[in-house]
Image (cartoon, rainbow, N blue to C red):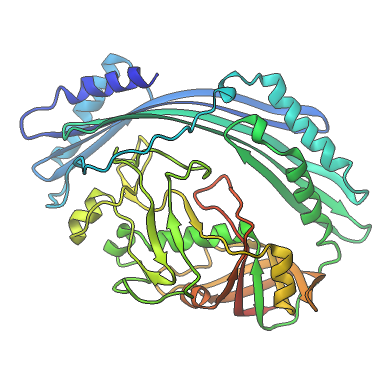
Length: 447
């Protein structure tokens, strides 16, 4: 498949005229989505897709066109459409196709052969087994709202007139479930998940226990007292915060004047034990990849090094516009032009697990989930306010559950006020891995 996609992309690039820069991205994907309910299949989708995206740059004008077919006639039409769009583009001196930068790609095993051969019947069985495990885990579990098995295998190729020619294969799968618990007077929901490169890596027990615990331990939750408190963010919550912080550390955010860390390279923006990296070469990351969206080799980028802001993430455009070099951080799909942003964020873990962090904190609140986080963040000022739920921490132990509370701070202050980072690194089906973190002096509004 990789050779076929490379051949298709190269056939378009070969048609470039003098002075014309052409970039071609060709993709082929297969995805399975299975949902079960009460031991039966509720929905089953097995889809195969393909597409091509063509970007043309001529006289500093850019045109983009895409199609969901690889038929020869469609390929020709798409190329002509991209050329036509370029003729109407606004001139921009920084527009150009990425050039090879000499960084060698790291070979990663991102497609486990078992994913190709795993039978649909076995995929269904995994989902049914997870649902059954949750249903039988605790008498307070009164139902499982949804149980999903999802997998995907993606092959892509990118060829450019500048000399880039690269193809890759990636695959992954996950189990996820949403549970429902009741104690007769209150009802709460919870979720659990497990991710892997192959079905053999999926852990039913992990997903089941998480879905059960997250729902049952919130039963009887009430509003918390208001005040400034030390909070522990659950790994899933931390991953969401990292995604927002990562977006402010992109060259694209800088160019648009939407980065709260503009002009702060070299400043201490966190404690010395805080190191934030974007490392798509880490094969354990769910979104690991050998190349970025422009075909440049992916690489490990240190964003915050021992609390100091080390730099920003760039694609070739933001690098040219800001006088930097690309960090191999182009993000895109075949039907869009490249943006710039994180590919696989994570904090360097600490030495204490979550239970130990709770004991160390003594008094505070464990934030298990947040709502409205993205809409509640102001990217320029860093102010945020989000709904939250979790459990109070009293005398170093988890205590009564709380909900309908609001946590508020700024992203800048939150980074500076991090007291500890947990050892419980979790891989999630998103561009950020999670880990428990302790943040002091967060405003909690409740009763």
